[in-house]
Length: 73
Image (tube, rainbow, N blue to C red):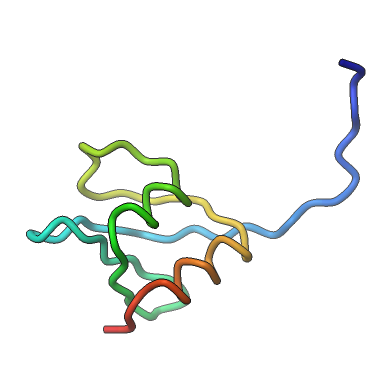
């Protein structure tokens, strides 16, 4: 496989998250909180099942997918 240079970058954003008692995730982006199901959140952020809180770096398109799949709280 030949070396391929990356010519474009998609802007990323940091989000903070916390696992709820029911196993869903609350995350904060741009000062707003959202609640999202665990499968979607783990698929997009690639975090472990055992992770309960932290910070994740997501692209703008991933952030929009989380917001569209979540509920604003």
